[in-house]
Length: 387
Length: 181
Image (cartoon, rainbow over all chains, first blue to last red; front, top):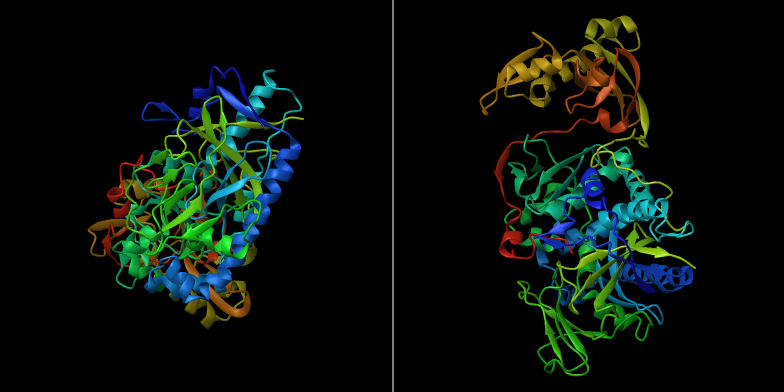
């Protein structure tokens, strides 16, 4: 695994515009960054990233049945009581899931370590699945990268295939929804909607704020059509806490990701995984924080059960240095995880987002930040495979 | 190769490509009215009329809605639209042009029916029958092969409230406006 500087394509911004990539620059700061790429060997990809992703995913899926059957675990994960039966029912009915991203720390040697599972509302998908693919193709065509260069990126194939598999049991149209004013979230659902259309699924989109509630507790679009199937790029725990939340269980709506997926997106899955697979090479030691827990010691990280974009994470490294990301997610219980600093390449901390589509390891996207905690200000950097 | 052999965009990009339908297909039959249905002699007169009456009774509730008569006529033709007022002010809907019969959930002898509209802009503007959700059903009346979902048109409900979702993202705002991760 190496970080290699490369000439940017002079026309990449025009290419981005032509392909509907509108969030490559966020608040004037670069987000898509092709001034460098990461190069992996095929062995690193297959043995150190792909296989562990498959295994970690299976380990996580293996916990869902136990959690939904255990009030104690539901308590530990702070799942609101009013929604527990609905979540459990979605699992027992086998409601299919679409995708997830696990964040891994990996430096090219030794086992990758699982930081967390982003299994409810993962983003950075379009840039990993599509724009990264186009970048490699064009850089090869222009002689900037060798013909033999490959990429670990089966995302689009598997997304389209999974939508096609889901289609027969899904009421159409399938609605796609995200926060109206988030360019990044809107771009992500535009892309997923495109994949669904490629699979022959009729789709619509609606801002999460525009969803209506009918007199008979159904969710409706702006023309009063009942929304029966909804892909929501919006945290399920937010929906629970909001005004329409109580209508969810009786609305008959089918969600993607399904309700049970929130259990895996919860940081509490990390101590549960550790309890069950203590010492697994790809896991970091993790525990629930309790009233009896001592102050955070060097070598440990504190994360809220529910948080997004690295918010409210505190890291104390073994040398005692403290790194804090402030944030709004201070209203849920906490977990503690053994600190494992991200590897640094040319002054950049890199985290690997390893994708799972349905239940298959599907590819990676790399994000870099100048700080230890990967935030929504991080940059997306493409990768290749060369031997 | 460890990557997708091809990638493409239908909606996002500047150049859409043809989509491939992977959905289950089933048989349906279209009639302009109960008389045409009876003449086809597949169903009894009672069945034809019951199916027609059902489609007709659904028509005003489910038909595509327009706020302007001109927009409606652009899609369905001059004199092919009617006005309705169901509490949301005057709206325009196309006239019911035919009805479609499909087997209900694959069970023979159980028929479901729905109203159809003749859209001038469908089938690449050569015209054809669409359902209330705008899905293309067939260019002509008679036998047709349709996707299963097109025989289950969307239902409507009376919305009493909106903006019941989305408040957490503004309360937790300042994070680039993004709620993903």
